[in-house]
Image (cartoon, rainbow, N blue to C red; front, top):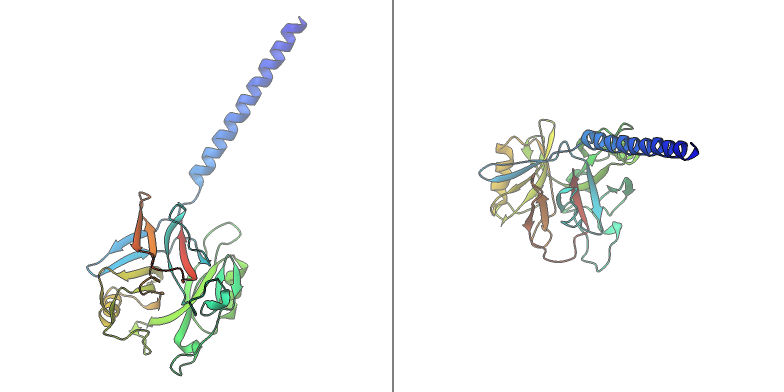
Length: 261
C-alpha cells in the first residue's frame, strides 16, 4: 500500500512538471508570436534605391561597425562626418552632437567657408521607445535643439549631425559637393512624415542626384558620409540575405546608423 501511494504521488508530480513545462513552452511561443517585428521596406526608381526606415528602431554605432552576421541589423551605413583619420576612436572626432546607446556626446563643431555651424548642419533624431516599448517619432531638426536631444536621451534614442541637402523642398543654398561631381551619394530623407535612406543606383552628377530626390517628393534631406572607403555599407533583405552596397576601403569611419528589426 505504501509503495503504491509513493508511485501514485510520483506520477502526479511528474504530470504536474510536464504540464508546467508545457505551459512555459506555450507561453514562450505566445511571447514569440506576439513579439513586434519592424519591417524595412526596400523600393527603387530608375535612379534611386530607397530604404523606408520609418517603422524601425535605430541606433548610432560608434567606434565599431556592426558585422553582417548580426541578424537583427537590416541596414548599416556611415552617418556623421569623421574629423581626422586616426588610428583610434574618439567621440570628439565625430562632427556635431550625437546620441549612441541613449548617451549624448558633444562631438566637434566647425564652421565651413565662413558659414556658422548651426546654419549649415542639422540633426536627425529618433526619440526611442516609450514605457510600453512603442516606437516614438523620428525628425530632422535645425539647431539649436537641446530639448530634442534631451528627449532622445530620456527615451534611449539616437541622433547624428549632418549637412543639409534639401531644406523645405528646395536644394540647400550651401552645397556639400560640387554640382558636377560624379559619384555615388546617399541621404537621409523625409517625405510626407516618413523617413528614408536614399542613394543613387549608378554614379551620377550631384546636381542630377539632387533633382532625383526632388522628383520623388523629398521635403528634407541630410547628407550621409560617402566617398571611396567611407561608403562601405550593407542591408539585409526580407529573406535574410545580406547585400554589400560598397566594399570596405579603410578603417577610418567612426560612426554608422544601424536600422534594426
